[in-house]
Amino acid sequence: MNSWFANISVNLKLGLGFGLVLVLTGLLALTGWTSLGSLIDRSNWMGDIGQLNKDLTDLRIARLQYMIANGDDTAAANTLAKLDAFSKQQAYLASTFKSPENVKLLGELGDTISAYKLSLNKMRQGYDATRAARVSMDSSAIRADQAMDALSQEVMARPEADSVRLAQYQLISKARQQLLQVRIDVRGYIAENSSANEQAALRQLDAALADTDNLKRQLPSEDARLQQFENAVLAYRDAVRQFRDAVANITTSRAEMTVQGADIVKRSDALYQIQLERRDIESTQARSLQAIATLLALLVGVLAAVLITRQITRPLQDTLVAVEKIASGDLTQHMRVTRRDELGVLQQGIARMGTTLRELISGIRDGVTQIASAAEELSAVTEQTSAGANSQKVETDQVATAMHEMAATVQEVAR
Image (cartoon, rainbow, N blue to C red; front, top):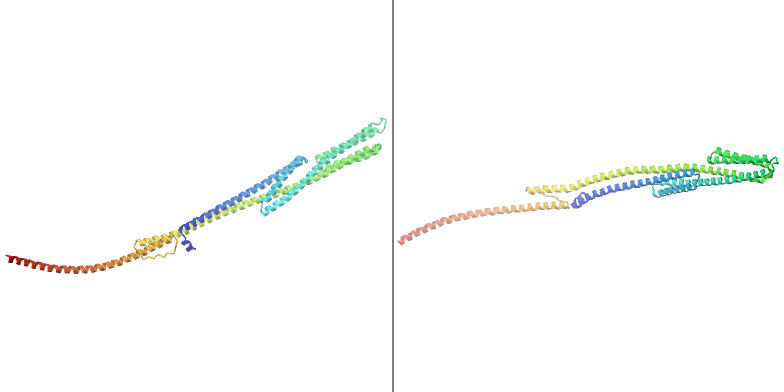
């Protein structure tokens, strides 16, 4: 690995080092981006759950308004709209969340919403039944009152001499007052659906029916009118019982919806708590990943810097030492170069330069030796030549002397 790394070019070394640092920096940025995206998604999910809780609050308020309005159609439509909004938000969350824990809670929440819808429909049916019962009570009371009024007029139309006319009229008036008391007690029961008010109203109705039997005995000739009155009172009692059953259904539905609402709140809070826990876990993981990535980037960057620096500066130092030795005249060093990068090429050039200089200086030394030998031979020849020249000079002096003497002799002869 080290040999391979040493043989690649310096450009590639630097590119690998800086590239690795850039890759780690990119990984660090990717880690931060991913972590930030995860936190943003978690925040969005928490916002969706917050919207679910808001829809639940709106639904509970609408249900209370519906109950306060005694099943008003407008309030019922508003409650159904809030329930639909809450159900749609739950379905949206169920399609968005993938965690098994969240999916399980949302599935259970969907089941609770379905049960809540059933309870709400049961409550609506109860309120519809109470309205129908009240209409039936009103119509029955009107028929009973009309029967008593007609009976009263018939009795009063009899001759004043009729001795039982006044007593019969008093019985009819008492029955009408009793019917009025029944209606008052029933209205009290309608206003406050307590068991005591219910029992009081039913007791008054039973008393009214018992008095009807007494009227039948006292007024045998008015049996048809009394039968109409009795049928109307019986219908009134049936309507009261229907009202009672409807109120019981409403009470049961209210209790069911209270439990279901508490269950929905519990599961919504559990969903929100899970998101908080996941957010904290993901935040911790993001910090850990960023810290690890940062430390890894720093460590790899330092290692890459040290390795690349050593791969560049050490051969430069070796080359500088070789150059200094060559500059100081030491040509005995032999550099062993195995690298094939630019610095290896430089070292090989320095090594070849040293070899060339060594061969050159060796050649110069041999030439100087040959020149010194030739100079010695030339000096010997010069000495021989000098000796010959001296001998020739002596001989020349002798010849000159002889010629001088000959010239003198010639002059003398001439004279």
